[in-house]
Image (cartoon, rainbow over all chains, first blue to last red; front, side, top):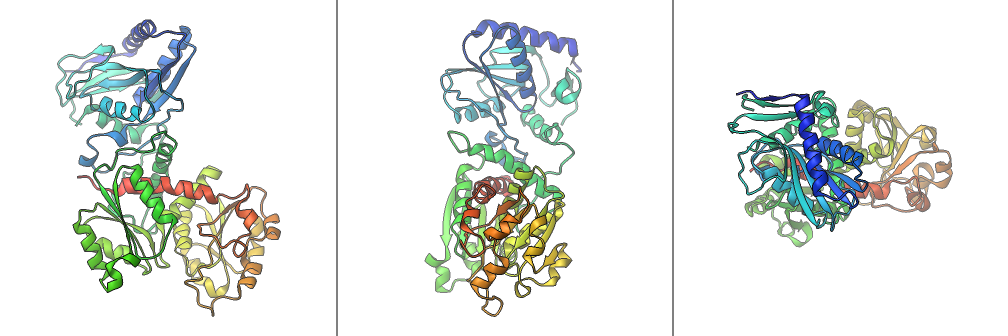
Length: 178
Length: 328
């Protein structure tokens, strides 16, 4: 199995996501958009810009590194490197849009939710992902999904590549076992 | 494992924020900076950057070492280093045990190894060790199964101090390469000087060691430093002056002039400070002898990085504890 979404597909998916988000949140109210490193951060940057174009004037953007919150830290070695988290606004009482590239087991999102709670108590947290590949191990679902990938075998990898970090926009399902 | 998590781990080395392929961290212990590569030192400094952010949060704690035990085994006095390691461990959610020699059975004659083995038998993951004997941490690392972090062994090394000093310089100047750094005072008895020397030379700084001949032998030149016995001859050309504490507990009176003479020759006095570069960065590992190796108002002035050193020490120690803690 080798599914590929090219740059146009990714653009369309992001456009559709922006449409949904624009309806779900009020442009006059504060909105926090927090991306999970690394591709989630890039997506959050794009969404922030696209929503600003639609009149969302009160967006605060942040970046979360979830390494220190992973539930498998004690099972892996060598240690994954930690990179800075940057949430430089008070998210107490704010609606938060949490952004990631791929939703799989749900464990990264669980880690991100725990991390976010250390920064304050948002009014609401909604989850946006570019690709949902199924395979959940935790009771976590996304509120906004760009593309849904069906029947991806667990050992396959779903790689989201974005121009800012990878020179190209695409989603590739890779049969290679990592 | 979770696909996204694997991706996150891979991305950590491939993303533009960390250019160049970096090796991962594979060491179980941190015993000296001499044995580290330049890349390993940079890796710790970069990790410290990430950990520094944790201390700015409203909840200054992350769960990375939840369920782990860090013991502070201090066979020699310390305030700053011990509290810094304890707080670092606590901010990583580890449980901490404090062990100090004066209140322990080593004062009843128990050997270092017996003490360490007994502490380890309680289920310790990391042992942070300070001891008056050079090589004590290496010795323990060969004997116990847990990770060992050297918090100062005699006059040999004090790796986390060297790392936090270099981190603080990098934060100030944005680079280490090409910096001219003077380390001044009692070099012979100083583990801080040795750890600084290793880290700075590996990262491409020029190190000038300054002190009286009795406390600074020419043999240090073999380690890549310039050895100078006259502070005034170099004070105007350095970017950093790192003033060491006069260790009254270690120096023998025959090695040392009088306190007044030491200050006159090797102290950072106001007069000398005026002849420094305009943006000179003044450092001191603490605790300071105010008025002896450093004039009080310089230590408290705008060119001083002394309190930043303490703040950064916490981030560096969090990074070290995180890295050395073995999986499982």
